[in-house]
Length: 88
Length: 458
Image 1 (cartoon, each protein chain N blue to C red):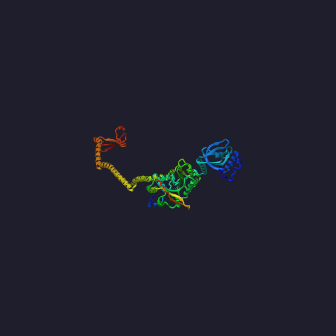
Image 2 (spheres, rainbow over the protein chains, first blue to last red):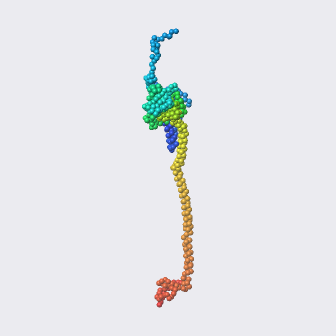
Image 3 (cartoon, rainbow over the protein chains, first blue to last red):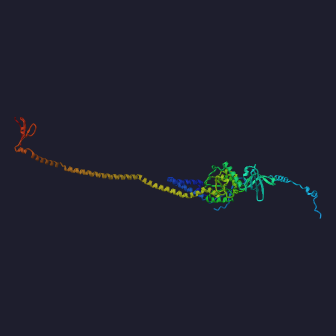
């Protein structure tokens, strides 16, 4: 299991990967295509670097998490670990 | 030796065998057999393989149903539905429903066929086509209701056997391409009786699943950024590995098709190999050729993003570098322009112009002065040369000269020698011809000393 994200990053709020990635794509495109004012450019760069970090962290997760869904006698859904040998 | 004792009820010996035997006609016996068969067996279902199929011009169809150990004559009369007849073919495994009876004329028992059902692959294929047509007519396969899959799934439901080949393939691909994916397995049997119901139930179960509804088993990982915001599953993967048509049959059952159709979550179906198409495949939002292919489709977005994210720092840096370079260039250009526009620069320019003007002015002055000086000198010279005393002296001299020349030319010398000059007083003219003088004319005669006025006489 990967370690929890650093507190500094968590403090910036939980940005879903998809949002971060879409933003990152937008930033790279804008930086490549438009003549941005220098301040904007540098702000975008910093934001981009931050988003890269977020995305990398998420992509760095090394293990598939698999759990088995069961219905208890009471009709409630419950998860239990699923043991399998997946050769990576 | 005495005969063995016989029962007192043994009357055999009372009548001769010829007296006691009951002789039946063939017809009677056959009728008895027929009655027995029809009564004892009657209407039955029987399965076997068709052989020796003969369609008579009368419209009746005769064939033999056999299995490994026995044979049964069968007849399908003309009145039976044509659809049933079309199912008959040599070698076809069928399930027949009919009445066992005896065809007296031949003393043959036979099955009068009322209904035919195909068995084995043939039966499944017919069933498959029928269900496919029915569901298509209901719009379960309509392309318009196919939903796109989320590009970056966080959590997927998996409907398959926990021990099959499919789950291994799927997990293997996901581990390689999208290891952050959470998988919620709803285990079920994927073949055999009841498998279809379990599959349908699993789909339904996964639709009811959401992160909020379970204990947060993710625990300390919850601080990690999720792939998306959904608390529910992003999609359901319905899969099993390859097998025969019978093995895959559960995925062709209506209950599975209905469950997929009812699913609020997008469903990916991957059953069997490339060539296998199931009803589940048709109803699902996405059909994948194999379990591995399904896993690849599901992980495509995240997998593709890996390369982009890996390249992103370089892209960002290049773009920033380019921006900085162009800003630096702009800056230096602006600096140069600014320097040109700076007041000191303008002042310097003014000073320089002033200097230039001053120089030009001085030069102009000098030139002007020089040329004026020349004029002055000229004038002065002329002025000096024009001294009055000299002029007076020169004039006097000239006068003297003129006097002398005048004196030389004047009459005084002649007069002094005794000559005189007479002039007409009236006209002032010198008289040179006496004839032109009239009487009484007044004359003046100038002598060396004085003059004489006179008047002529007639």
